[in-house]
Image 1 (cartoon, rainbow, N blue to C red):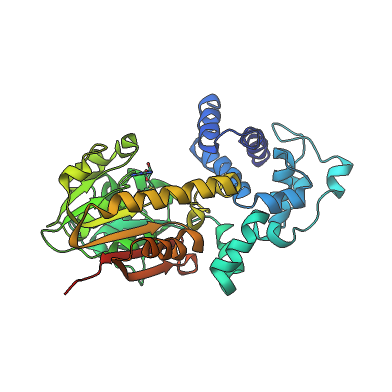
Image 2: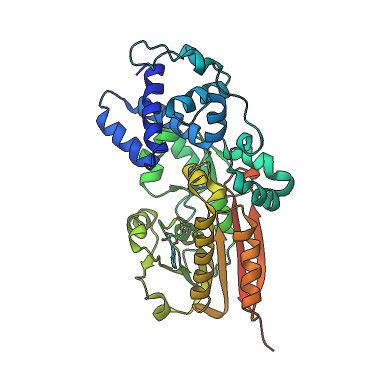
Amino acid sequence: MTPGARIAAAIEILDRITAGAPAEKVLVTWARRSRFAGARDRAAVRDLVFDVLRRRRSCAARGGGESGRALLIGLLRERGEDPAALFTGEGHAPPPLAACETTAGAPPEGAAALDIPDWMLPAFEDSLGNDMAAVCRILRERAPVWLRVNTARCTRDEAARLLADEGIATRPSDHVDTALQVTENERRTRNSRAYRQGLAELQDLHSQALCRDLPLAPGARVLDYCAGGGGKVLALAARQPRARYFAHDAAPRRMRDLPTRARRAGADIQLLSCGEASGRAPFDLVLCDVPCSGSGAWRRSPEGKWRLDRPELERLMRMQVQILEEAKILVSPGGVLAYATCSLLRAENEARIKAFLAANPGWVCHFRRRYSPLRGGDGFFLAQLGRKQTI
Ligand SMILES: C[S@@+](CC[C@H](N)C(=O)[O-])C[C@H]1O[C@@H](n2cnc3c(N)ncnc32)[C@H](O)[C@@H]1O
């Protein structure tokens, strides 16, 4: 496909997404229908679509509208390129700019320039303080690709060498000792030997940091209460292979790939069905990686940024309260209840813990940390709670 034809495809896809269809679904459908598009074309079109979704408001401002066409015109202007060079009407390129499109558009201002919704601005200011603008700028960029080396099976240097043999260049993180950032040939990662043999998994840097910070003793019973795909419980099992691991999720189908991933990694993780966790309690560590706004990971899932509204945020926060209440009774007397989000918002993080402690005076917070997107990974929050010791 020519660069112009890729733009035309991205316009068509964005029109469907702005009409309400999920981006992944539209991209898959387009790829199936477009046999003429090779792997590079599909990757380039996908990048265009996600680049727009991350900066949807500034693209709309510069392009002078919300249509797929205006958004792409806006994206090219954001990049300092002249849209007329690609909107030629030749071959499969989109038709040339009309006079009104040439003059439409203006530089974005305020929350639009930061590419966050207006209603979110006060919460971001309150939660991020002086870092707010820098964090918003990072959320407008593509996320780096991070691998977690399965240190139960090999060292980080060995994994890096294996990847390099297949042309995948990496750089070790200087503050998380399981993490490698892929710097060349990211798209080859999933087919690499290191990945297929369970020596490396895709996992964000700060998701790895959060798992590093959880207490794990040999022989401990560990429950990942909101396991989803199981990224965190797999990281814990690699760090301390001599503990016992259990995974649970209110939507068990989300754990469907976990047995395969665990086998690949050589980890033993027992899946619990709904309602089974209480029969298996107590646990020394219960991790609640709760559903949240996802604001710390908006550069990976940029649709969430525009889909989230106040009622949905309130619904998520009610779930967070409920999950902590369900999970606290599963924790052994000296055990740890860990609360994690990939949210930047104080309401879902510090304020949630404060409210839990107010409602549960027998509990204390031993550890609390924010993982900032300014340090290479996504935004995460972790709190570790325990029962007060009685003498
Ligand atoms: C943020 S995701 C977990 C991601 C996962 N820990 C990982 O690292 O890949 C939150 C998960 O919580 C689950 N969930 C929602 N309500 C729940 C509840 N009441 N009890 C347990 N899990 C719940 C959702 O189905 C979802 O899979």
